[in-house]
Amino acid sequence: MIPVQRHLFDIPEDVAYLNCAYMGPLMKSVAAAAEEGARRKAQPWTIKPADFFETPERVRGLVAQLMNATADHIAIVPSASYGLAVAAKNLPVKAGEEIVLAADQFPSNRHIWAKIAAETGARLVLADGEDLTEAFVSCINERTSIVAAAACRWTDGRKIDLLEVSKACRQNNAALVLDLTQSLGAQPFSVSGIDPDFVIAATYKWLLGPYSCGVLYVADRHFDGEPLEEGWMNRAGAENFANLVDYSDTYRAGARRFDMGEVANFAALPAVASALAQINDWSVDNLYSTLSQRNLYLVERAKGLGLVPVSEIERAGHFLTLGLQDSAPADLVQRLASDNVYVSQRGRSLRITPHVWTTPSDEDRLFKALERHI
Image (cartoon, rainbow, N blue to C red; front, side, top):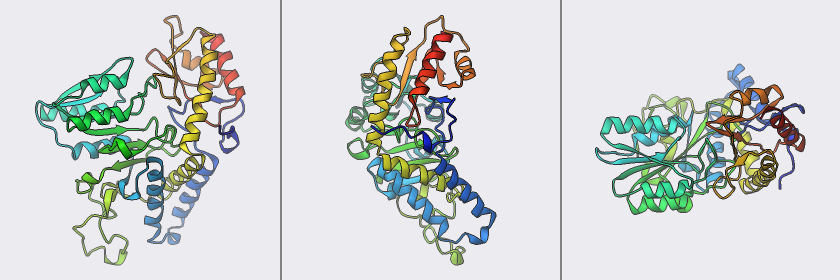
């Protein structure tokens, strides 16, 4: 178990922030890295050509460590929707084929596939049920072109066994695209065995990084794919500023061709690197075990209030969702916030997502507030 790390975060003692699935707070060290980067930009003569490449390469290596991949497989993008657009651009779909995704999937991971389906004459197929793994596998067949999935559903934390989904994809020659924004950094993941085509994650949730940043894993078989942008930094020889007008028709190695423009963001990217380094230092295995144990304790307290959680068999351990009765006030989240308790509601589920900053006092504050308002 990782001990409480409240001292690393700028969270007042009277605030119970149990909402990492909404937005992870920046650690003090991460905010300091962003501030230092912004100060460097205030004095641009201190920024050397090598600085454009060193931090992106560090981020690639840190992300690869989280995924059991290599730095060559990692592109740096501004958002999950950008990474999903890259995937959609490089995966062919024909009329009559099917794209499988979860019912109630996050909008960014639905809109792009709905657009592709409308443009090509393909059909969206929604996987739903108490067992999302079984639901996905039952939807995958010889007509399936793409499966767009996650390790857990963002609304209720219901988990999906990606090894089983991947097996069904391979048996039917379907591509697998994963949005791990709600799990990467908190739930163990390895591309080995699963062999996805693309993996996307925004950094502002469980990766504890800044907004408007994301990472993209690209399988080797797509290294010759088409990027969304034709920037100067994703071309071979970009490190040589004096010769940039010797235009290169060759992209940089691996997934780097898919990098967003201005990838060397001097404020955001050092912050991403700082957050990833700390997560790797804790280790995702340790984080998942710690958060899972904490949530099991919260489950028992919730049952005492008559709240029904999604069971630990069906949900990812770092997520806790409690089913709300019809009698629960419509403005419950706002009422809890007035008591300095911060959670989310998605549908009829109260989504509670603590992290290593959470203290026993936070937990007490949560349940005292729930007793008052439901």
